[in-house]
Length: 102
Image (cartoon, rainbow, N blue to C red; front, side):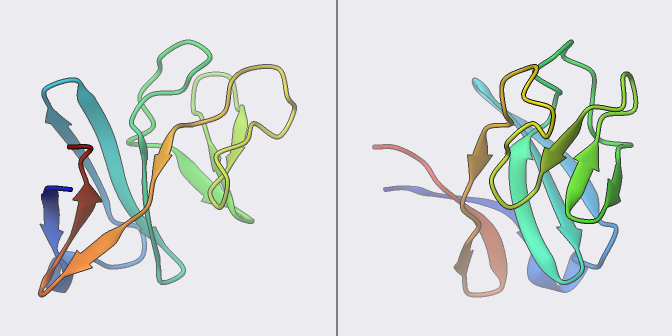
């Protein structure tokens, strides 16, 4: 699988957010409590951007309707809409990224 580098590890810190668009991918790279996550950049409910979303107790909260999604699984807490698509963070030297399908 080809590796898509998203950011240098040295630039990451808690509270970090960066939207990355490449072809059909629209990703949000974030770090919270030392954990790095790669998720879809928009809420599946109404496609609102998650770049400014708050993170509380392991949930990313959409700023539009306050829908919460678990950062460990992407599941919507209330079960009213689809969960977030997530990609495993992959580390390659001094970079974090994702593996693209071949």
